[in-house]
Structure formats: C-alpha cells, structure tokens
Image 1 (tube, rainbow, N blue to C red):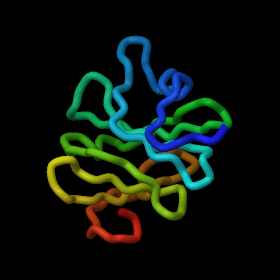
Image 2 (cartoon, rainbow, N blue to C red):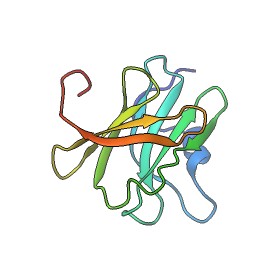
Image 3 (tube, rainbow, N blue to C red):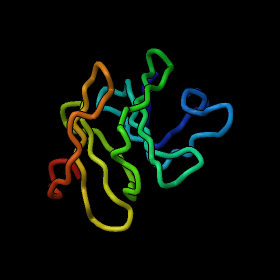
Length: 122
C-alpha cells in the first residue's frame, strides 16, 4: 500500500496515539517512494510539538528525539528534504523555516537551524 500525504489512516493514528491521550496530527507529509510519513503534531500540550516517522512496512511510528528543541516553536507543517532523511518545518505565525538534520539510526536531531526559504523545498 502506498501512503498519501494528509490521508491519515486508522493504522497511522493507532501507531502514534497513547493510551492516556491521542496524538493531534497537524501535518503529514509522505516520502517520494510512498513508504514513510512525517507526522507533526502534539499530545495534550500545544507548547511541546512532537515529530514521528511512520513506516508503512512495519506499521509503526518512531518518535524523533528532539531533546526539547521544538518547545515553544510555533510549528505549522513538516515536510521531507530531498534526501528522504532530513526534513524542514515552517512556523504557522510567520515565514520562518527550520531544517532538521536527523540521525537515521537513533532518530536524534543532529542539527536544528533556521534557513532561508527556497523554491527547492517549498
């Protein structure tokens, strides 16, 4: 099955929801090959955005270890970079764009920095 951007299935929702609180998905962006999805959202506290990477093959979502880098950042949407590992996020209240470089084995953020908007990824 190929995933489609912004089409959150029950299987995706179940992979990120916790027993005590559902995960409110703000944005979902699917990789070019349709096999993984980047999910941005939050649990109960809007000030603590979370990012998950969902694999269609395993049916599981893995949380990106942001080490609190996203706290109080008004994130609106997350989308894959061309390399299929890193991703970009924009703010919902202005035109700020952040690039997130990700360690694909540990799902830890290697770098989180503001970048200039570009037609290459917007």
